[in-house]
Amino acid sequence: MRFFIDTANVEEIRKANDMGVICGVTTNPSLIAKEGRDFNEVIKEITSIVDGPISGEVKATTTDAEGMIAEGREIAKIHPNMVVKIPMTAEGLKAVKVLSTEGVKTNVTLIFTANQALLAARAGASYVSPFLGRLDDISVVGAELVEEIVEMFAVSGIETQVIAASIRNPIHVTECALAGADIATVPYKVIEQMTHHPLTDAGIEKFQADYKKVFGE
Ligand code: E4P
Image 1 (cartoon, rainbow, N blue to C red):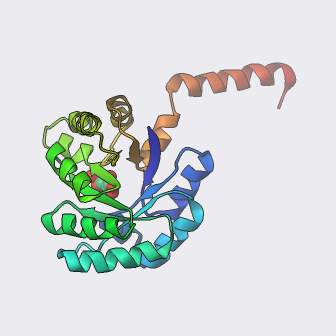
Image 2: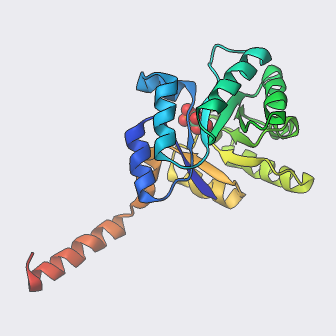
């Protein structure tokens, strides 16, 4: 399983990229709004930091296929690494069909059932994004959805990649990796949490203390 970072904050993207752990970025309208910056400006900056797939979503207020297609074409023009993120609706699927035929990569987002993922894949999506955390929030085990989609795609020989999204904690990451997700898109906070273990931190302190006792600073 590979990692993307799920943020539009360029400082977080730089930090994760410098660690060498991410190979792509996902954004969404809420994450872009949180930064309060112009969409094109922030996306361009992200493409200059990470050399890998960058998902930019069509405007939250665009709900018709024609509108999504027009916006998707503009997003794709920003950089060759751009992936157009499209919500899982019937209109969204129409847009995916047209954009994928034109060679534009798409990521169908807000996937909450395996059947939605199957439809998105058949419409031509390059990626599907099942949302784990939001399912857990309503007492449905999100990791089981990822497992189901991975299995369904394998049975049908579908090459669309599964991006486990709405990751809220390190346990989600382990679950998605074991479920066979191709990618997990992870907030910076979770990447940071994953680097730690109390015994690692205690071990570093002990090594430092022992070394200093004999050799000084
Ligand atoms: C996925 O691409 C979305 O940007 C994201 O993972 C949503 O996460 P949330 O449910 O924590 O908002």
